[in-house]
Length: 190
Image (cartoon, rainbow, N blue to C red):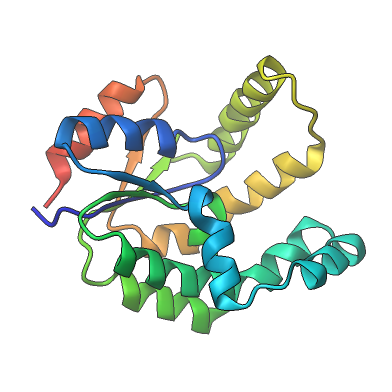
């Protein structure tokens, strides 16, 4: 088995939860890119002031476009710095509008056979609805405020073809527990 397992997918699909279960069962450390993003962005030259200006002018989608070159660099750096791990990509780390960046990330991921895309359903509209309901429930329970912009962003992540292009396999999570999804991944790892 190649001991690096990479989980990709949209917001709220369960990458971190399933990643924790895999790490426990396989006795491998877990790296969640969202936890190390700030460090790698700083190393790659990501400028918070520029991002803030873009956010004010163009919103979150503009910030995501600005971040994509840094996200692509971060993928390479994280894989180099965290070998033999379960790696939970953030939702934005597998979505690239720029074909050159997407091709670069494909090259980076080429030697990794265990890149799994998690989606609720093969029906993307159903996935959007399931995750909107799940995110609403999770954020409400946590007392966090949110806007429809979050759901529009996740719709974009779900519909974007780069997730499918980067994944070596897709696992559908609808009506499955995280433990069941974990077991299914374990049966498919190379």
